[in-house]
Length: 237
Image (cartoon, rainbow, N blue to C red; front, side, top):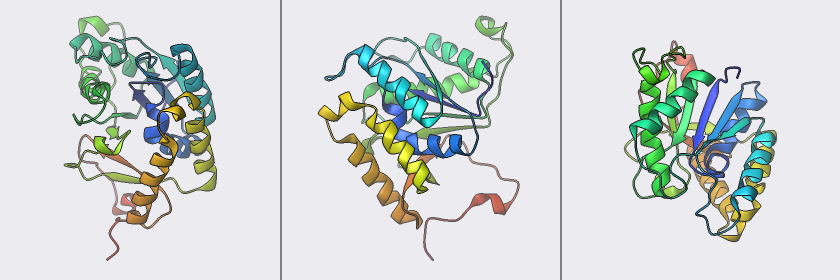
């Protein structure tokens, strides 16, 4: 597989699109490659079969201009934090060789698979650069530039971390994000997830002085070469 600039992990077939799909649309429209790794088929969900949900994810990824793969860990609603899982995801990081990695936040008060996947990915990002890992010895090590977390639901917000707000207001970005969320039709029977995400993005946009924004929560302090790279602050002084 050719390297992707952005590698995004989701616990379930719709997590990426609902949680950060607007950001992915913005990045791929700018010419950057994105690859999705979905760690279950949502088989514990109330609506939609695993086959339907996988098809929805493939369609949504295509809309967002991303490639996608599915892996099986412990199964939907059964995920546990295991060293073996982190090593497996580290293998993917080494194979894809991304600059940025995105994953679900590790806040506890949300779907348990989301918080556990956040922990697993955080460990995997470290393991990917350890040269002595015997399980990965045949794949070159890789150190990512940034690990950032996205919140699928309001409860998942990492309140102790100052977020990075990404402006997704451009009409072509919003069109692709809406279409990607709409591709998950089976989930609309549970809750109006699209309206929820758009409302969240509208509120964050109002905070940032733009129309729509999505928050990412960096694992580590961001390093810039110039103040010009830092953009603007969300506060209106």
